[in-house]
Amino acid sequence: LYKCVLYDADPRRAVLKVISVEGGLGFHPYYLHMAVAPTKNIDRFEWFLEKATEIGVDEITPLLCDHSVRRALKPDREKRVILAAAKQSLKGIVPQLNDMMTVSELLSRAQGYDLRGIAFCDRELVNSAGEGISRVHITDVLGKLAGEVTSPRILIMIGPEGDFSREELSVAADSALTPISLGESRLRTETAGVMAVASVALTVR
Image (cartoon, rainbow, N blue to C red):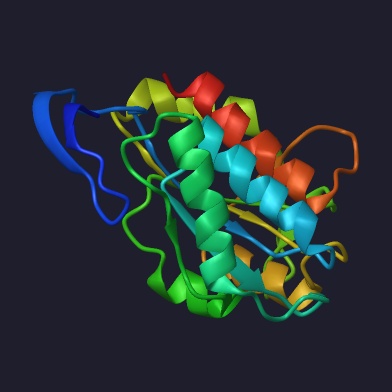
């Protein structure tokens, strides 16, 4: 955050003198990467972008899933939503918005995370060998992580309105993702995304 004195307010430019600098504005003690399938109604996805930025997120990847209805975005528009939310909530760093990618593409690049979690509707994540792994509530997973790792790097995946396909969940299981629960209610995609971001912010402190 730069505090300045305005010297020249010409309509074509502004000339400022910096008088003080405050570092780490809007800092949070974790790195959060949210991978979320955009909703059919783009307003709902933009609402997620806005609220996630306000709460605290570092990177956002729109997911192109087997059950996705919306298969393209206008990145310049979405970046403007994120920038406005960062300014409003006094964030010194604007979250990075990646290009849309599939689950497999994301997982091939998603290395170096202390937690790679996936939220979905079923109670178990079943791998290609037919072995099931039960979901764990997100606050239990995050609480354990916060007690073991300083400044953890976290990836959380949220599927589209039709949820992830069985094939996508199998790929996630084979990639050793942690199956997480966001509670007993069936949430809309954008609500699940905000719930996950808020859970991280409240648990990893």
